[in-house]
Length: 566
Image 1 (cartoon, helix red, strand yellow):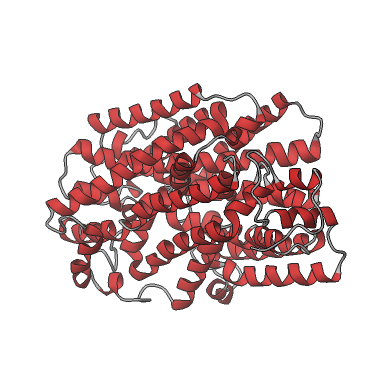
Image 2 (cartoon, helix red, strand yellow):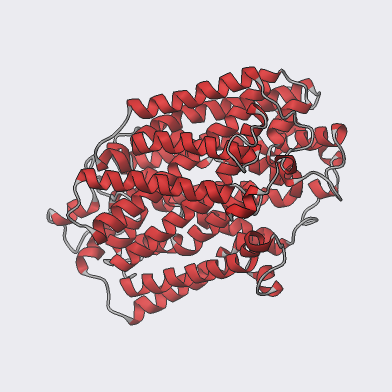
């Protein structure tokens, strides 16, 4: 992979219409922002596991809502969503619908219940709920894999935007192009502050990053719309007058992709949202289930501000590209690289001041860094807490656990950087592979584990292995050839690529995983009564104390009659 990456030239990644050069004002702005992130990481540096993994369960609902928003709105949301809508039209709406719907399911069915269960990590829940170190290990490996795949898209976004702001520094690191140098630089800074601060500093940074990204995105949208005559006070609705001028590929349903792929993608994004470890772990950082619910509401509101705006930005960018650069669709049309920075491109094509275009670009970097932070914390905690402490070395000291966690963050950073030097797909597609994995393997375990007390160890293991197998098969068929030979042809079967696409494999996997988990659980021994009581306590109408978990209540004298009524 490294060998292939080193031959990649910067000019192959230069988006049409972007001025790739060193820009003083945007560079000062972005460097100041990155130094601020490092300073916050230093101020909130941690030395114990409670602060390292769950921020001492001390985060309030508004701050956690902002962290949810920043954690969630990655480069895929800030840059990739508008890109997909611009390049794929109606198909891109599957991402808006899927990602938003997933959060409603989290709010209604999982947020408060997971907080009541009260663990450190997503694999921690799987291991303790199903009384199985094997299930914990599979969940930990899956979490690490999700962090790796998801972060590749973030690194690509940081590299492209960094290339625009700082110019082409190709050759500064021997053998690497300007884009690749930017990927290495941005990932080094991200890994640097995360190894210092853990979840506590990451959360404080996410709140700041949310403010930066939402101000940059909304200000960019309003100024582009107003200066170009597209809109006045509500561009989110006014962009509709452009629809008929943007071509059939933008406005007509299923012109670019099939109806089945739209459904498969949307479904995978919904269930993937509910299975992403870095999303679920946010509910462990608050003191009670009430705070968990309210922080989800705040998070939805903060996310809505950007998601409602992305289609309008895509429409403005598409029209400006057609007017100033060339045809958007057809051969050659707009490249995926240009699409990935359509938000920045629109600001530049609208001839806004350079410093302001830099601000819009800085918002993209803030979004990518915030999500990478959440992913790396979740991935490293899976290795340190779930594999090292719970399975390999139960007598590990706090210092040893934190050290292994920091080394895991560095390992994730190195792997992600290498893969991002020559990524196989656009940002949003790369991120979607991670959603498909989370939906196929982890979501069924969280949902059944919380809502059906008879789900047992054997059922969970059978279901997780089934989901992991289906996802791996789809990835080997579609994505692996792109890395090995640059080919877009499926490795195993065209039929498999059509009906079990890598981007939407959860549509087939989730029903099968649910069925296998339920059947195997029914024909094997029921889980222990104490586990059932803990599950019932997670649904009890009786409020629990702050910092208290369902296990605490059961251990302190819960009874078999604990009601399960929600």
